[in-house]
Length: 213
Image 1 (cartoon, rainbow, N blue to C red):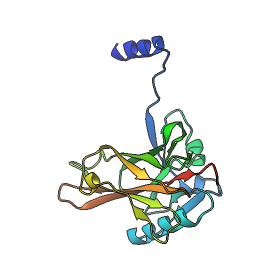
Image 2 (image 1 turned 30 degrees about the vertical axis):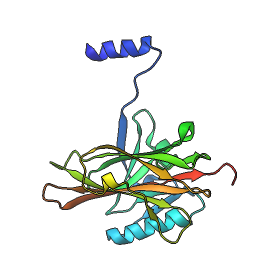
Image 3 (image 1 turned 90 degrees about the vertical axis):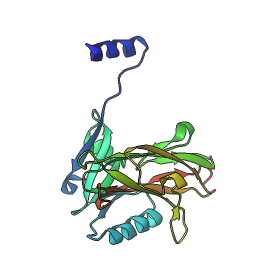
Image 4 (image 1 turned 45 degrees about the vertical axis):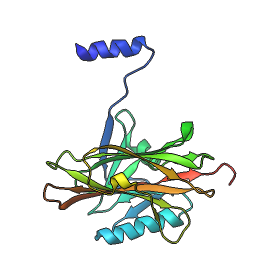
């Protein structure tokens, strides 16, 4: 009864209820060989990080992560949007464990979700990260936000309030974007009650592309 009433009210206001967000595991062998797809098959987390940063820095196209075991690929988007469409849009992340992760860079009406491209001349933008891990009791999370902007090393743009473990939720950070633009990605780790790392995830990067380039 309550759901029906909510749907009626939204329709009366000229809005439709949003489709729930779906997190679908992807079989890497079923993914078409799009130019933007990058397979990450490193066993060690340090090797995976090195590959992710390198591809984020070097590739002409904004990369879409496709994980090879022990990394899984998860395609994120409205439940009404087919999984292959989500992959084509780059809306994927890598994970070990059961983390659910989303990220978005808002630059006015020219923002983009993970794997996307934001075309804007703004010199500041809000990076938003949302995560949870329903399978880990008492889970807390370590978050690192990375800026890859044509420099030899990525720039750590994690705000001070995220320098410690935090509960599940949605977190935001203002970031400065240089004139040449860049790519921005989120790294999240799940901690159990004892503080052990029991899950890892990397979102496909979001690119800021300048209109004058």
